[in-house]
Length: 124
Image 1 (cartoon, one colour):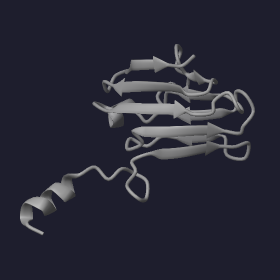
Image 2 (image 1 turned 45 degrees about the horizontal axis):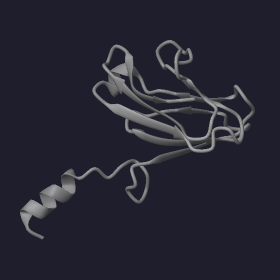
Image 3 (image 1 turned 90 degrees about the vertical axis):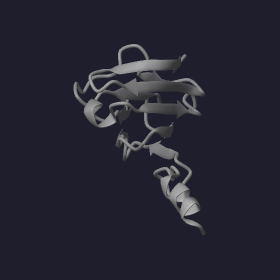
């Protein structure tokens, strides 16, 4: 390979899941009902078999996530328990769209470093 191809390959986004898909799949269960997102978890598919109000995903810290967008989807939200999104700094649920309890509920958030901005609200 020439240097240019090596450089481009090295700069390409590989994601955070083996295989380089860039998708983090979360399966919340009664035994493991919570997940702390990492700053690199920018695309999350969340499933829950936990009871309503038990499944919790905590967003990464605002400062670590500054300048990043996060896409979170619950493909089968209505099948089992709902999934609640919590802010790391306050430990509280997102007020307007933190309860994902319908099929294909989805959300795009942006961290300013000081607060979370909702860029797309597909939560029913």
